[in-house]
Image 1 (cartoon, rainbow, N blue to C red):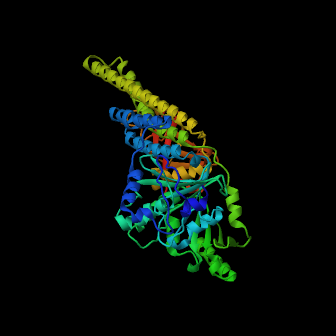
Image 2 (tube, rainbow, N blue to C red; image 1 turned 90 degrees about the vertical axis):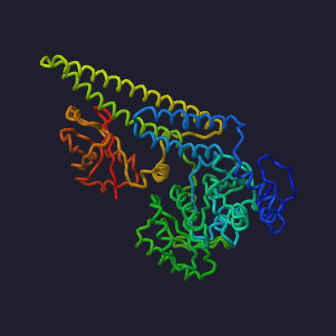
Length: 540
Protein backbone atom coordinates (compact mmCIF):
# COMPACT_ATOMS: atom_id res chain seq x y z
CA UNK A 1 0.00 0.00 0.00
CA UNK A 2 1.75 3.21 -1.14
CA UNK A 3 1.18 6.77 0.01
CA UNK A 4 -0.63 7.99 -3.09
CA UNK A 5 -3.06 5.10 -3.19
CA UNK A 6 -3.81 5.34 0.52
CA UNK A 7 -4.11 9.09 0.79
CA UNK A 8 -5.62 9.89 -2.60
CA UNK A 9 -8.07 7.03 -2.75
CA UNK A 10 -6.86 5.23 -5.92
CA UNK A 11 -7.04 1.85 -4.27
CA UNK A 12 -9.16 -1.18 -5.02
CA UNK A 13 -11.15 -2.76 -2.21
CA UNK A 14 -9.01 -4.86 0.05
CA UNK A 15 -9.82 -7.37 2.74
CA UNK A 16 -11.44 -5.70 5.72
CA UNK A 17 -9.41 -5.39 8.88
CA UNK A 18 -10.68 -5.35 12.43
CA UNK A 19 -11.01 -1.78 13.78
CA UNK A 20 -10.41 -0.46 10.25
CA UNK A 21 -12.80 1.79 8.36
CA UNK A 22 -13.04 0.46 4.76
CA UNK A 23 -13.03 3.10 2.06
CA UNK A 24 -12.81 3.40 -1.72
CA UNK A 25 -12.62 7.05 -2.73
CA UNK A 26 -14.20 8.07 -5.99
CA UNK A 27 -12.39 11.09 -7.39
CA UNK A 28 -12.75 14.03 -5.02
CA UNK A 29 -16.00 12.82 -3.48
CA UNK A 30 -16.17 11.79 0.15
CA UNK A 31 -18.33 8.77 0.91
CA UNK A 32 -18.69 9.66 4.59
CA UNK A 33 -20.17 13.04 3.70
CA UNK A 34 -22.38 11.72 0.89
CA UNK A 35 -23.66 8.57 2.62
CA UNK A 36 -25.20 9.24 6.04
CA UNK A 37 -25.11 5.54 6.95
CA UNK A 38 -21.37 5.32 6.32
CA UNK A 39 -20.92 8.54 8.27
CA UNK A 40 -22.79 7.02 11.20
CA UNK A 41 -20.62 3.90 11.06
CA UNK A 42 -17.52 6.10 11.16
CA UNK A 43 -18.87 7.96 14.19
CA UNK A 44 -19.70 4.72 16.00
CA UNK A 45 -16.22 3.35 15.44
CA UNK A 46 -14.43 6.50 16.55
CA UNK A 47 -16.41 7.00 19.77
CA UNK A 48 -16.40 3.34 20.85
CA UNK A 49 -14.57 2.12 23.93
CA UNK A 50 -11.80 -0.45 23.41
CA UNK A 51 -12.29 -4.13 24.12
CA UNK A 52 -9.88 -5.56 26.68
CA UNK A 53 -8.10 -8.10 24.54
CA UNK A 54 -4.34 -7.75 25.06
CA UNK A 55 -2.08 -8.04 28.08
CA UNK A 56 -1.28 -4.32 27.73
CA UNK A 57 -4.97 -3.46 27.96
CA UNK A 58 -5.26 -5.54 31.12
CA UNK A 59 -2.27 -3.80 32.69
CA UNK A 60 -3.76 -0.40 31.89
CA UNK A 61 -7.02 -1.49 33.51
CA UNK A 62 -5.10 -2.54 36.64
CA UNK A 63 -3.32 0.83 36.78
CA UNK A 64 -6.64 2.60 36.29
CA UNK A 65 -8.09 0.76 39.31
CA UNK A 66 -5.05 1.60 41.43
CA UNK A 67 -5.44 5.30 40.63
CA UNK A 68 -9.21 5.73 40.58
CA UNK A 69 -10.07 3.29 43.36
CA UNK A 70 -7.13 2.45 45.62
CA UNK A 71 -5.30 5.79 45.60
CA UNK A 72 -8.47 7.89 45.56
CA UNK A 73 -9.78 5.95 48.56
CA UNK A 74 -6.42 6.41 50.28
CA UNK A 75 -6.56 10.21 49.90
CA UNK A 76 -9.99 10.29 51.56
CA UNK A 77 -8.84 8.34 54.63
CA UNK A 78 -5.84 10.46 55.56
CA UNK A 79 -5.38 14.14 56.28
CA UNK A 80 -2.89 14.82 53.50
CA UNK A 81 -4.24 18.02 51.92
CA UNK A 82 -2.22 17.47 48.73
CA UNK A 83 -4.25 14.35 47.89
CA UNK A 84 -6.57 16.09 45.42
CA UNK A 85 -3.64 17.62 43.55
CA UNK A 86 -1.76 14.30 43.43
CA UNK A 87 -4.87 12.50 42.15
CA UNK A 88 -5.37 15.10 39.38
CA UNK A 89 -1.73 14.73 38.35
CA UNK A 90 -2.05 10.94 38.25
CA UNK A 91 -5.06 11.23 35.94
CA UNK A 92 -3.03 13.38 33.53
CA UNK A 93 -0.09 10.99 33.84
CA UNK A 94 -2.34 8.03 33.02
CA UNK A 95 -3.56 9.80 29.86
CA UNK A 96 0.07 10.13 28.76
CA UNK A 97 0.66 6.46 29.49
CA UNK A 98 -2.34 5.38 27.39
CA UNK A 99 -1.08 7.52 24.53
CA UNK A 100 2.39 5.95 24.87
CA UNK A 101 0.98 2.42 24.81
CA UNK A 102 -1.08 3.19 21.70
CA UNK A 103 1.87 4.81 19.90
CA UNK A 104 5.20 3.71 21.44
CA UNK A 105 7.08 5.56 18.69
CA UNK A 106 6.09 8.89 20.23
CA UNK A 107 8.18 8.08 23.31
CA UNK A 108 11.39 7.45 21.41
CA UNK A 109 11.76 10.78 19.60
CA UNK A 110 11.55 14.51 20.18
CA UNK A 111 8.59 16.40 18.75
CA UNK A 112 8.84 19.20 16.18
CA UNK A 113 5.56 21.11 16.07
CA UNK A 114 4.57 23.10 13.00
CA UNK A 115 2.29 26.02 13.79
CA UNK A 116 0.84 29.07 12.13
CA UNK A 117 -2.42 30.50 10.86
CA UNK A 118 -4.74 28.56 8.57
CA UNK A 119 -3.39 30.25 5.44
CA UNK A 120 0.28 29.68 6.31
CA UNK A 121 0.58 26.41 4.34
CA UNK A 122 1.62 24.07 7.14
CA UNK A 123 0.36 20.86 5.53
CA UNK A 124 2.03 21.41 2.16
CA UNK A 125 5.21 22.42 4.01
CA UNK A 126 5.22 19.12 5.94
CA UNK A 127 4.51 17.05 2.84
CA UNK A 128 7.52 18.56 1.06
CA UNK A 129 9.98 18.60 3.95
CA UNK A 130 9.26 14.99 4.90
CA UNK A 131 9.67 13.79 1.33
CA UNK A 132 6.07 12.58 1.00
CA UNK A 133 4.16 14.83 -1.44
CA UNK A 134 0.77 13.36 -0.51
CA UNK A 135 1.45 12.52 3.13
CA UNK A 136 -1.39 14.75 4.32
CA UNK A 137 -4.37 15.90 2.26
CA UNK A 138 -3.99 19.52 1.18
CA UNK A 139 -7.33 21.30 0.99
CA UNK A 140 -8.55 24.84 0.53
CA UNK A 141 -10.88 24.53 3.50
CA UNK A 142 -9.89 24.25 7.17
CA UNK A 143 -9.56 20.59 8.14
CA UNK A 144 -6.89 20.08 10.78
CA UNK A 145 -8.88 20.52 13.98
CA UNK A 146 -7.25 17.50 15.63
CA UNK A 147 -3.50 17.34 16.36
CA UNK A 148 -1.83 15.10 13.78
CA UNK A 149 1.46 13.33 14.54
CA UNK A 150 3.67 12.16 11.66
CA UNK A 151 6.49 9.67 12.16
CA UNK A 152 8.51 6.83 10.67
CA UNK A 153 7.14 3.37 11.37
CA UNK A 154 7.06 -0.19 10.15
CA UNK A 155 3.95 0.27 7.99
CA UNK A 156 1.95 2.85 6.06
CA UNK A 157 -1.21 3.63 7.99
CA UNK A 158 -3.28 6.35 9.61
CA UNK A 159 -4.88 5.90 13.03
CA UNK A 160 -7.25 7.95 15.16
CA UNK A 161 -6.97 7.64 18.94
CA UNK A 162 -9.98 8.60 21.06
CA UNK A 163 -9.95 9.61 24.72
CA UNK A 164 -11.07 6.12 25.73
CA UNK A 165 -7.80 4.76 24.37
CA UNK A 166 -9.30 3.06 21.30
CA UNK A 167 -7.22 3.21 18.12
CA UNK A 168 -9.01 3.00 14.76
CA UNK A 169 -7.35 2.85 11.35
CA UNK A 170 -8.71 5.46 8.91
CA UNK A 171 -7.68 7.17 5.67
CA UNK A 172 -7.93 10.47 3.78
CA UNK A 173 -11.70 10.73 3.41
CA UNK A 174 -12.14 9.88 7.08
CA UNK A 175 -9.61 12.56 8.10
CA UNK A 176 -11.51 15.18 6.12
CA UNK A 177 -14.83 13.95 7.46
CA UNK A 178 -13.93 13.98 11.14
CA UNK A 179 -12.67 17.53 10.95
CA UNK A 180 -14.79 20.56 10.11
CA UNK A 181 -16.45 19.04 7.05
CA UNK A 182 -18.41 16.63 9.26
CA UNK A 183 -19.46 19.46 11.54
CA UNK A 184 -20.80 21.48 8.62
CA UNK A 185 -22.86 18.60 7.24
CA UNK A 186 -24.03 16.74 10.34
CA UNK A 187 -23.34 19.26 13.15
CA UNK A 188 -21.01 16.73 14.79
CA UNK A 189 -17.50 17.55 16.03
CA UNK A 190 -14.69 15.22 17.05
CA UNK A 191 -12.14 17.51 18.70
CA UNK A 192 -13.54 16.60 22.13
CA UNK A 193 -13.61 12.87 21.26
CA UNK A 194 -10.35 12.27 19.41
CA UNK A 195 -7.12 12.79 21.25
CA UNK A 196 -4.91 12.66 18.18
CA UNK A 197 -4.36 11.35 14.66
CA UNK A 198 -1.17 9.44 13.89
CA UNK A 199 0.28 9.07 10.40
CA UNK A 200 2.91 6.34 10.16
CA UNK A 201 5.16 5.93 7.12
CA UNK A 202 7.84 3.41 6.17
CA UNK A 203 9.66 5.99 4.03
CA UNK A 204 10.15 9.19 6.00
CA UNK A 205 12.80 11.91 6.19
CA UNK A 206 14.17 12.57 9.69
CA UNK A 207 13.44 9.15 11.14
CA UNK A 208 14.24 10.20 14.72
CA UNK A 209 11.72 13.04 14.87
CA UNK A 210 7.98 13.22 15.42
CA UNK A 211 6.30 16.02 13.47
CA UNK A 212 3.10 17.59 14.76
CA UNK A 213 0.64 19.38 12.49
CA UNK A 214 -1.57 21.64 14.61
CA UNK A 215 -4.86 23.43 13.92
CA UNK A 216 -4.63 26.81 12.22
CA UNK A 217 -5.70 29.25 14.90
CA UNK A 218 -6.99 32.15 12.80
CA UNK A 219 -9.88 30.66 10.84
CA UNK A 220 -13.06 32.71 10.64
CA UNK A 221 -15.57 29.97 11.50
CA UNK A 222 -17.17 29.02 14.80
CA UNK A 223 -14.36 26.55 15.55
CA UNK A 224 -11.83 29.37 15.85
CA UNK A 225 -11.57 29.46 19.62
CA UNK A 226 -11.56 25.68 19.99
CA UNK A 227 -8.81 25.23 17.41
CA UNK A 228 -6.80 28.07 18.93
CA UNK A 229 -6.87 26.40 22.34
CA UNK A 230 -5.94 23.01 20.86
CA UNK A 231 -3.06 24.56 18.93
CA UNK A 232 -1.76 26.45 21.96
CA UNK A 233 -1.97 23.39 24.21
CA UNK A 234 0.13 21.23 21.90
CA UNK A 235 2.58 23.88 20.69
CA UNK A 236 3.48 24.79 24.26
CA UNK A 237 4.68 21.30 25.12
CA UNK A 238 6.48 20.42 21.89
CA UNK A 239 10.24 20.02 22.07
CA UNK A 240 10.87 22.28 19.08
CA UNK A 241 8.73 24.70 17.08
CA UNK A 242 8.65 25.78 13.43
CA UNK A 243 6.31 28.72 12.87
CA UNK A 244 4.97 29.39 9.38
CA UNK A 245 3.92 32.82 8.12
CA UNK A 246 2.53 33.51 4.66
CA UNK A 247 5.13 35.76 2.99
CA UNK A 248 2.24 37.74 1.51
CA UNK A 249 1.90 39.33 4.99
CA UNK A 250 5.23 41.12 4.55
CA UNK A 251 6.34 40.29 8.12
CA UNK A 252 5.16 38.35 11.17
CA UNK A 253 1.62 39.65 11.88
CA UNK A 254 0.89 41.06 15.31
CA UNK A 255 -1.66 38.27 15.83
CA UNK A 256 1.13 35.72 15.36
CA UNK A 257 3.45 37.62 17.70
CA UNK A 258 0.77 37.70 20.39
CA UNK A 259 0.19 33.98 19.96
CA UNK A 260 3.92 33.15 20.14
CA UNK A 261 4.33 35.24 23.28
CA UNK A 262 1.46 33.34 24.91
CA UNK A 263 3.35 30.06 24.40
CA UNK A 264 6.13 31.10 26.82
CA UNK A 265 8.72 29.26 24.73
CA UNK A 266 11.93 27.89 26.25
CA UNK A 267 13.40 26.88 22.89
CA UNK A 268 14.03 29.43 20.11
CA UNK A 269 11.55 29.16 17.24
CA UNK A 270 12.45 28.73 13.57
CA UNK A 271 10.26 31.15 11.60
CA UNK A 272 9.51 30.21 8.00
CA UNK A 273 8.07 32.78 5.58
CA UNK A 274 6.15 30.37 3.34
CA UNK A 275 5.08 30.56 -0.30
CA UNK A 276 8.32 32.33 -1.20
CA UNK A 277 7.86 31.31 -4.85
CA UNK A 278 5.16 33.99 -5.13
CA UNK A 279 7.71 36.73 -4.40
CA UNK A 280 10.96 37.92 -5.93
CA UNK A 281 14.05 36.80 -4.03
CA UNK A 282 14.90 40.41 -3.20
CA UNK A 283 11.40 40.91 -1.79
CA UNK A 284 11.69 37.81 0.39
CA UNK A 285 15.03 39.00 1.77
CA UNK A 286 13.47 42.34 2.68
CA UNK A 287 10.56 40.55 4.36
CA UNK A 288 13.02 38.43 6.37
CA UNK A 289 14.86 41.54 7.54
CA UNK A 290 11.64 43.21 8.71
CA UNK A 291 10.41 40.00 10.38
CA UNK A 292 13.65 39.62 12.37
CA UNK A 293 13.37 43.20 13.62
CA UNK A 294 9.74 42.68 14.65
CA UNK A 295 10.56 39.46 16.51
CA UNK A 296 13.44 41.12 18.34
CA UNK A 297 11.24 44.05 19.35
CA UNK A 298 8.71 41.55 20.70
CA UNK A 299 11.53 39.75 22.59
CA UNK A 300 10.78 36.44 20.86
CA UNK A 301 13.88 34.25 20.65
CA UNK A 302 14.34 32.70 17.21
CA UNK A 303 16.79 30.31 15.56
CA UNK A 304 16.46 32.10 12.24
CA UNK A 305 13.94 33.55 9.81
CA UNK A 306 13.97 32.02 6.33
CA UNK A 307 11.94 32.10 3.16
CA UNK A 308 10.69 28.78 1.81
CA UNK A 309 8.72 27.46 -1.14
CA UNK A 310 7.06 24.08 -0.61
CA UNK A 311 6.17 23.99 -4.30
CA UNK A 312 9.82 24.26 -5.37
CA UNK A 313 11.38 22.86 -2.18
CA UNK A 314 13.72 25.84 -2.13
CA UNK A 315 14.96 28.10 0.65
CA UNK A 316 15.96 31.75 0.78
CA UNK A 317 18.10 32.63 3.79
CA UNK A 318 21.29 34.39 4.77
CA UNK A 319 23.41 31.25 4.90
CA UNK A 320 21.31 28.79 2.85
CA UNK A 321 20.18 25.31 3.92
CA UNK A 322 19.11 26.58 7.34
CA UNK A 323 15.96 24.44 7.51
CA UNK A 324 17.76 21.18 6.76
CA UNK A 325 20.56 22.16 9.14
CA UNK A 326 18.07 22.78 11.95
CA UNK A 327 16.19 19.51 11.41
CA UNK A 328 19.43 17.53 11.11
CA UNK A 329 20.65 18.94 14.43
CA UNK A 330 17.51 17.91 16.31
CA UNK A 331 17.07 14.63 14.42
CA UNK A 332 18.08 12.42 17.31
CA UNK A 333 16.11 10.06 19.46
CA UNK A 334 15.21 10.92 23.04
CA UNK A 335 16.84 9.21 26.02
CA UNK A 336 13.61 7.36 26.66
CA UNK A 337 10.20 7.96 28.18
CA UNK A 338 9.98 10.09 31.34
CA UNK A 339 6.82 8.32 32.57
CA UNK A 340 8.61 6.57 35.45
CA UNK A 341 10.34 9.79 36.50
CA UNK A 342 7.08 11.75 36.36
CA UNK A 343 5.31 9.12 38.47
CA UNK A 344 8.03 9.35 41.13
CA UNK A 345 7.78 13.15 41.20
CA UNK A 346 4.02 12.98 41.80
CA UNK A 347 4.38 10.60 44.75
CA UNK A 348 7.44 12.43 46.12
CA UNK A 349 5.39 15.63 46.25
CA UNK A 350 2.50 13.78 47.88
CA UNK A 351 4.82 12.28 50.50
CA UNK A 352 6.38 15.66 51.31
CA UNK A 353 3.29 16.65 53.24
CA UNK A 354 3.43 13.44 55.25
CA UNK A 355 7.04 14.22 56.13
CA UNK A 356 6.20 17.82 57.05
CA UNK A 357 3.31 16.74 59.29
CA UNK A 358 5.46 14.00 60.76
CA UNK A 359 8.12 16.56 61.68
CA UNK A 360 5.49 18.76 63.34
CA UNK A 361 4.23 15.83 65.44
CA UNK A 362 7.77 14.81 66.40
CA UNK A 363 8.46 18.32 67.67
CA UNK A 364 5.21 18.20 69.65
CA UNK A 365 6.13 14.82 71.15
CA UNK A 366 9.53 16.19 72.14
CA UNK A 367 7.99 19.16 73.90
CA UNK A 368 5.46 16.94 75.69
CA UNK A 369 8.22 14.62 76.88
CA UNK A 370 9.99 17.53 78.53
CA UNK A 371 6.80 18.67 80.23
CA UNK A 372 5.73 15.21 81.40
CA UNK A 373 9.06 14.58 83.14
CA UNK A 374 8.98 17.96 84.83
CA UNK A 375 8.93 17.18 88.59
CA UNK A 376 6.79 20.25 89.28
CA UNK A 377 3.96 18.84 87.18
CA UNK A 378 1.62 16.54 89.13
CA UNK A 379 -1.94 15.29 89.37
CA UNK A 380 -4.52 15.95 86.68
CA UNK A 381 -2.24 18.25 84.69
CA UNK A 382 0.31 15.50 84.27
CA UNK A 383 -2.43 13.01 83.39
CA UNK A 384 -3.84 15.34 80.72
CA UNK A 385 -0.38 15.80 79.22
CA UNK A 386 0.20 12.04 79.26
CA UNK A 387 -3.12 11.43 77.49
CA UNK A 388 -2.33 14.11 74.94
CA UNK A 389 1.10 12.56 74.44
CA UNK A 390 -0.53 9.20 73.66
CA UNK A 391 -2.94 10.85 71.23
CA UNK A 392 -0.12 12.58 69.35
CA UNK A 393 1.86 9.34 69.25
CA UNK A 394 -1.19 7.57 67.82
CA UNK A 395 -1.50 10.30 65.17
CA UNK A 396 2.15 9.81 64.32
CA UNK A 397 1.68 6.04 63.99
CA UNK A 398 -1.39 6.53 61.76
CA UNK A 399 0.50 9.01 59.63
CA UNK A 400 3.39 6.60 59.13
CA UNK A 401 0.96 3.81 58.24
CA UNK A 402 -0.77 6.00 55.63
CA UNK A 403 2.60 6.93 54.16
CA UNK A 404 3.60 3.26 53.91
CA UNK A 405 0.28 2.48 52.18
CA UNK A 406 0.91 5.28 49.69
CA UNK A 407 4.44 4.02 49.02
CA UNK A 408 2.99 0.56 48.37
CA UNK A 409 0.56 2.00 45.79
CA UNK A 410 3.45 3.81 44.12
CA UNK A 411 5.47 0.59 43.86
CA UNK A 412 2.48 -1.31 42.45
CA UNK A 413 1.85 1.31 39.75
CA UNK A 414 5.55 1.52 38.91
CA UNK A 415 5.85 -2.26 38.55
CA UNK A 416 2.88 -2.32 36.17
CA UNK A 417 4.36 0.61 34.26
CA UNK A 418 7.60 -1.32 33.77
CA UNK A 419 5.66 -4.37 32.58
CA UNK A 420 3.60 -2.52 29.98
CA UNK A 421 6.59 -0.50 28.74
CA UNK A 422 8.65 -3.67 28.40
CA UNK A 423 5.87 -5.30 26.37
CA UNK A 424 5.74 -2.24 24.07
CA UNK A 425 9.55 -1.89 23.94
CA UNK A 426 9.39 1.58 25.49
CA UNK A 427 12.64 2.59 27.16
CA UNK A 428 12.19 4.32 30.52
CA UNK A 429 14.54 7.16 31.42
CA UNK A 430 15.48 7.83 35.05
CA UNK A 431 16.60 11.40 34.37
CA UNK A 432 14.86 13.57 31.74
CA UNK A 433 16.83 15.70 29.31
CA UNK A 434 16.75 19.50 29.41
CA UNK A 435 14.32 19.50 26.48
CA UNK A 436 12.02 17.04 28.27
CA UNK A 437 12.19 19.02 31.51
CA UNK A 438 11.11 22.20 29.75
CA UNK A 439 8.21 20.42 28.06
CA UNK A 440 7.03 18.82 31.31
CA UNK A 441 7.28 22.10 33.21
CA UNK A 442 4.84 23.62 30.75
CA UNK A 443 2.43 20.72 31.25
CA UNK A 444 2.34 21.22 35.00
CA UNK A 445 -0.05 23.50 36.82
CA UNK A 446 2.90 25.21 38.48
CA UNK A 447 4.01 26.57 35.14
CA UNK A 448 0.81 28.56 34.88
CA UNK A 449 1.56 30.44 38.13
CA UNK A 450 5.34 30.52 37.52
CA UNK A 451 6.00 28.85 40.87
CA UNK A 452 8.96 26.51 41.34
CA UNK A 453 9.73 24.13 44.22
CA UNK A 454 13.32 23.43 45.24
CA UNK A 455 14.82 20.94 47.69
CA UNK A 456 16.78 22.76 50.39
CA UNK A 457 19.16 22.02 53.27
CA UNK A 458 18.11 22.89 56.83
CA UNK A 459 20.33 23.67 59.83
CA UNK A 460 19.64 24.91 63.35
CA UNK A 461 17.52 24.21 66.42
CA UNK A 462 13.96 23.43 65.39
CA UNK A 463 12.55 23.64 68.90
CA UNK A 464 11.44 27.19 68.09
CA UNK A 465 8.98 25.68 65.61
CA UNK A 466 7.19 23.51 68.17
CA UNK A 467 4.61 26.21 68.91
CA UNK A 468 3.45 26.33 65.28
CA UNK A 469 0.35 24.40 64.21
CA UNK A 470 1.97 23.03 61.06
CA UNK A 471 5.18 23.31 59.08
CA UNK A 472 3.67 23.07 55.60
CA UNK A 473 3.78 26.70 54.49
CA UNK A 474 6.06 28.96 56.51
CA UNK A 475 6.81 32.45 55.25
CA UNK A 476 10.39 33.46 54.62
CA UNK A 477 12.64 35.49 52.36
CA UNK A 478 15.93 35.32 50.52
CA UNK A 479 18.66 36.95 52.64
CA UNK A 480 21.78 36.20 50.60
CA UNK A 481 22.72 35.17 47.06
CA UNK A 482 26.15 33.64 46.50
CA UNK A 483 28.00 31.36 44.12
CA UNK A 484 26.79 28.42 46.23
CA UNK A 485 23.11 29.30 46.04
CA UNK A 486 20.37 31.04 48.04
CA UNK A 487 20.27 31.61 51.81
CA UNK A 488 16.78 31.88 53.32
CA UNK A 489 15.46 32.94 56.72
CA UNK A 490 12.05 32.14 58.18
CA UNK A 491 10.02 35.03 59.58
CA UNK A 492 8.97 33.02 62.66
CA UNK A 493 12.26 31.16 63.18
CA UNK A 494 15.17 33.41 62.15
CA UNK A 495 17.68 31.18 63.91
CA UNK A 496 17.19 28.43 61.32
CA UNK A 497 19.41 28.42 58.24
CA UNK A 498 17.92 27.24 54.93
CA UNK A 499 20.04 26.86 51.81
CA UNK A 500 19.06 26.09 48.20
CA UNK A 501 22.17 24.97 46.32
CA UNK A 502 22.74 26.53 42.91
CA UNK A 503 23.08 23.13 41.20
CA UNK A 504 19.63 22.18 42.56
CA UNK A 505 18.13 25.32 41.00
CA UNK A 506 19.78 24.57 37.65
CA UNK A 507 18.57 20.97 37.67
CA UNK A 508 15.02 21.71 38.84
CA UNK A 509 14.33 24.81 36.73
CA UNK A 510 16.82 24.96 33.84
CA UNK A 511 14.87 27.75 32.15
CA UNK A 512 15.35 30.09 35.14
CA UNK A 513 18.26 32.51 35.19
CA UNK A 514 20.06 32.86 38.51
CA UNK A 515 19.81 36.66 38.36
CA UNK A 516 16.01 36.35 38.54
CA UNK A 517 16.38 35.77 42.29
CA UNK A 518 16.91 38.76 44.57
CA UNK A 519 17.50 39.59 48.23
CA UNK A 520 14.22 40.06 50.20
CA UNK A 521 12.34 37.88 47.67
CA UNK A 522 9.44 36.21 49.48
CA UNK A 523 9.27 32.40 49.61
CA UNK A 524 7.18 29.63 51.16
CA UNK A 525 8.98 26.91 53.13
CA UNK A 526 7.83 23.40 54.01
CA UNK A 527 9.84 21.66 56.74
CA UNK A 528 10.30 18.00 55.79
CA UNK A 529 12.81 16.73 58.38
CA UNK A 530 15.46 18.05 60.74
CA UNK A 531 17.80 18.40 57.76
CA UNK A 532 15.56 18.97 54.74
CA UNK A 533 13.03 21.52 53.54
CA UNK A 534 11.14 22.38 50.36
CA UNK A 535 11.10 26.01 49.20
CA UNK A 536 8.51 27.48 46.79
CA UNK A 537 9.50 30.60 44.85
CA UNK A 538 7.09 32.52 42.62
CA UNK A 539 7.86 34.83 39.72
CA UNK A 540 5.65 37.42 38.04
